[in-house]
Structure formats: C-alpha cells, structure tokens
Amino acid sequence: MARLSKPRKNKRKKTPDFLPEELKELLTPEEQKAYLAEMKKRFGCGIEDGAEPVDAADCLERAEYARTEKERLAWIRRARELDPEDIDAAAQEILATCEDVHETLQALKPLIKTAEAQLEKKGFFQPEYIGDFWSVLETRPYMRLRYAYLEHLVTVYHLRPAIAECRKLLRLCKNDNMGVRYRLIALYAYLQEEAPAMKLVKQYGEESTPFLFCMALLKYTLGKKRAAKSYLTRLLEVNPDTQRYLKCLDRGQDVFPEGDLAYGYRVNTIEEFRALMGDSNFLYMTAISFAKWVLHSPDGAAAL
Image (cartoon, rainbow, N blue to C red; front, side):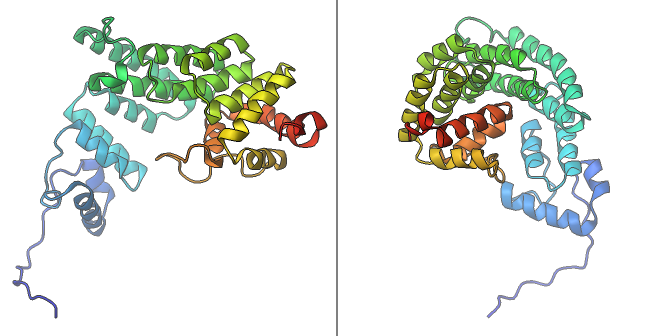
C-alpha cells in the first residue's frame, strides 16, 4: 500500500539561485528539474533547495557530470567567478572554448607561466618539493595543466618538444603518478632514440606492456631483430593478448580504443595495447610493419 503524504500547496518553485545564468537560459523548467535531481543524487542533499556551490572545485565537479558542453562551460565559468586564480578552472575554460589545437597550445602557454608564478610565490619550487609534486595537493593543478599541454603537443606532432615536456614532468614527479613515462617511451620508440629509451627502462625497471612493446618496436626499426624478438618474448609472457593485438594490427582493425577509457583499462590485456595506441597513434605504421614481420616472416614468427 502506498504511503500517504501531506498535501502540498500548489506553489511554483523559484529557479534555484546556484544555477549559472547560462544554464538558466539554456534549460527549460522541466530540464532544470531533471538536472537538479541528478545533482542531488550525485552530491547529496541540499542541491534541490538551491544550495550554492561550495567553491570552484565544487563547480568543476558538477561540470564533469554536465549533460551538454554548454552546461559544462557554464559551471566552469562559475568556478572562474568564485576563484579567478584557480588553475584547473582556467585550463578547463581554455580547453572548452578554443577553436582548434594550435589555439589551445597558444592559450595554455601563458597559463603555465601564471601557474608557475603562483607556485614560486608559495615556495613550491624549492628543492624539497622537486620530484614529489603529485604528493602535494597544491601542485596537482599545475601538473594537470602541463600534462594537457603535453597531450596537445603530441596531437600536432610536435614530438621533440613533447619529449622535453615529458622530461620536465618526470623531474617534478619522479614516481610518475600520471603515467608520463608511457608517453615518453613511445616517443623514444618512434624517433629511434635508443640510448634515452634504455635509460628510461632502467630508471623504472618495469616489465609492462607499454615498455616492452615500445622497446620491441624500437629495436625492430633499428634493424636489431634479435633484441626485438627478446622484448617480444617477454611481452608475450606479460600480456597474453599480444598475439591477438598483432593480428588486429595486421588486419588494420580494432587497433584503437573502443569506447571511453577515461576511467581506466585492464592492464596486460588488449585494452592496454589500444590505450597505448590511442595515446601514441604516431606509432601506428611502425606497429603495423612490426606485426607483419612477426606474423608472416620466419624470422619474426620464431618468437611466437
């Protein structure tokens, strides 16, 4: 039996004050209601009652769950209003409003300088912090900003500047909580930078899919087929989907990420190969040639 509730007065609800003006203009009353219900589910009680965002970070979290780009931009701009010096909000606004990748790169450069000045003023570039930036919450927006800059450098194939950016990030965060080393090993493989690649492998000392795959590609492109087969053999032991992915490369099918990998992928599966290729698509032609050598030549097939 349904529980009876007290009758409510037929009173029109006022549009919640916490909605940015852009969002009020964009959504119908019914859409506003649905949006508020979603926000209440995600962020707890008080949202439907017109609760103001706590701070810029609160706005950015709400922007993450926006249903449209206009909604998302409205929340980002509200974050900028609440804290004009918030680096995350400034970066998100650039990424949301710039027309193309080159414009984005140009806009990110001065923001990096601004972020550096903020951290310098607070003393975070002192020697005791260098190498541990991700461990300090105040430095994370700066690291995210530089990583976004790195991604855009790769997108426009500014690969040697991208290498320099990777090295800067790894100097600031030696534990590499952001996975920069996987970007860097792919860049080294493509540009045939053997000595720096070997040094990076030694530095992190890991038998991971990205490292082994990229080193196999690097040795193959240098004509060092015995070394390439050695890395391939180790890769086969680490990732049981290696041969399956090589066949995908050979066919030119199912090579790149499927769906949204924003929340991660399963390591040592075909998903990790696809994530690597999605981040480093400049490796594509080299990887195809390598796959054909492994699968169709007696020399390469010996490693399988």
